[in-house]
Structure formats: C-alpha cells, structure tokens
Length: 133
Image (cartoon, rainbow, N blue to C red):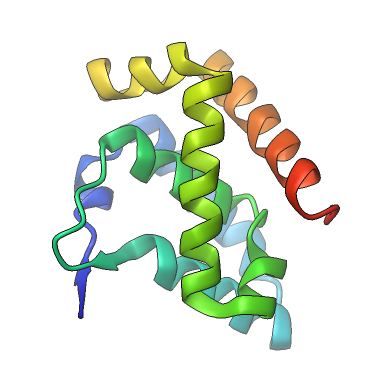
C-alpha cells in the first residue's frame, strides 16, 4: 500500500512557493503531457508504507517533479519508475551536493542560491542517466 507523504506540510515555505508557481506554469500543459505529470506527482506525493524519507529527500523529489525533469520517466515507466529515479537522484545529490542536502535537513529551508545548485545537480543527474532533456 501507499501512504500520503507528509512532505507538503513540512517542506520549506520558499520551496512551496516555487513549486506552486511551477505547477501553475506547467498546468498549461495538456493531454499526454498532463497525464505524465500527474503520474510523476503521484510518485512524489505518496510513498510506500513504512518508507521513511528525510526532508531533503522529499524536497529534492518534489523539486525534480515540479521542474518537469521526471515527466518522460513517468511516461515510460509509471509511478515505480519515477520512484526508482528519485531514489537514484537522492544518492546522486547526497554524493554531489552534500552541503545542500544537509542545509535542507538541518534548517528545514533552502536558500535561493542553493535552489539553483540543486536544479543544476538534477539536470546533471538526468543527462547522466537517460540522455533525456
């Protein structure tokens, strides 16, 4: 079974605003693109029962989905494919940008400069794994 991830209440106000804006921007997408987006959101907004995710893990997954990075994964392999990609993304971020992962977990916030670095890391991860845009 799946449980609703507690992320939205916990995720930082700045990230929430950013994500809300991205959702609005991306909601102009229709049709197949929209169904891929909904699949990606399902993966990040719910989690397998008993799985514990750190705040940073939740925030990283949300940010990647909000940016549209996981749309093609969602189209190709559904919720479980997106979850696998997000798990690999966590490992990548923990290795590549450990200071930002720590910043989110320790302060429950993320500075805007760190958001840019996180976005760059997500892009690097995506291009290294799939060759998707």
